Image (cartoon, rainbow, N blue to C red; front, side, top):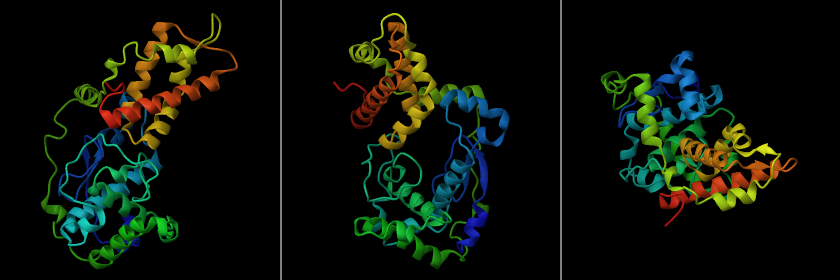
Length: 302
């Protein structure tokens, strides 16, 4: 990432530190890297909790994104008179769960899940990441008239980087420090707290899906175990649903686990030769439930 910044004419090297998650401290040009990526011995814990440990490609994509935040904070670009006009109100409230507009042409696509639509600060970071990525061809990719808003955002980033790239930062990273309490817990405590904080309201499902589940997995006697069929494809379904619906991966994981538990309780099975049909049906159902959650805060609206 530092090599990419240098090639792009940016002198700043945002320092990285071990954190509880990806991110930058509010207003500070530092990059927090999740502790579970720092030591391979910790990978298994993240896999068990989230079933989605990042690979090298996704880690670099995340670093580019966080570098966008760090540069925005280092030069206080969010105070530029054009910033709010281009990206929206920087001071607007920030929510972890948001309802994106899939396939909207107002924002770039970099991280999965329409992440640039989450908040204007994320929109800037995502735009910067696309601008920074070698070979992204952003000028050509967003040249069509329907991408005019995105092109304006990329042009703003391009202009700002030309102005401040070799200038000393307004906020020197050397004068900032991460919160010393950010890692004030054991690994076990972290995953317990994270499971509680991440947990969507899967308990409300109860028997509400039983009729649909029986219609999808209707084999009598012999057949493929429905719960195992779903769990074997959990990661693929998680990424697909999260990427297109815009939800957090853990929301989809928790939902799949809850549905699989119910499938076991009902002892449902897929008819031999119809497993793909059943999986397509389940993916559509899970995607719809996640969309309900993002829109209403519940999988089953009242």
